[in-house]
Length: 362
Image (cartoon, rainbow, N blue to C red; front, side, top):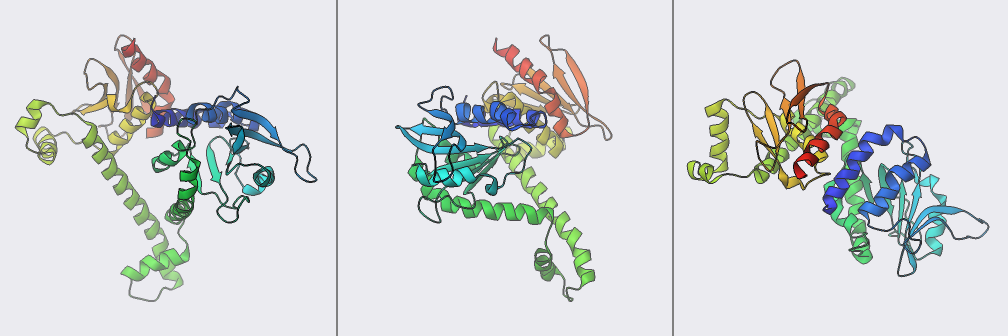
């Protein structure tokens, strides 16, 4: 699999199993070791590459251990400390990382619970681990813009200097993005006042704050939905292959979309696009993402392998107002419909989706 596909596959596993992973050891076995082996590419069973329970006595502290040390050229390069999967990550809980950072050659320290990975270096003072991470990778909602930097830490393309050079920018960029996410979800008074002042001419009183706080929150959510919708449509437009007949009949993609929606009465909804992305993410554990295609129709939204009607993966029956169904197929291409409470319920049928994809590859 490609690097991005490996990340997607592990993210899918994390999202399905995190609630069942209650202890630190379970998080290590289920998520952290696969991260080291599959994503970073190091052999977790070779002590020349990965040292579990790494010990380096420091001062008065004897026998303290860091969960994993990744070794390259006989030198420790990356330290990893693990916590339980559903536990909150706080750097105060990683005192070993602080101490070991100063007595080894490691320039990267990772604090993780198997779901979220916080990457630290020494931007503030040489050989002293920073108090804030320069990069945070969350497998419950992967930020794909971070993957090129993560790839630089893999065994295949290890480029520590490049990571360190980009760390300061990543640190502040990530902090700003997390602040924006917090403000969008629960806006502070100053944030509300900032936007209210652009559209409201009167004094920002207590009554105005109460009036505008939910409005700012709603406007932020609507803005994010619009951005997601636009990105999904652009992504789908760039991956859907056109036949020669389509290209000859329609001079541009915009004209094709207009003809599709107005001429046939077919309208692809945001929910259908979101459902398609979920199915695609699941299927990507078996095949390359560009092989997953879709075709919309009046009665259902079809998701196909290689854009081939004889290779159906799933169908989204989202046209009814009250109920939505996911259609999945068996080896004989018989469809079974499952009622969905939400788009996320598609993940409950991930095994069936992967199974039908595998059946086309055999």
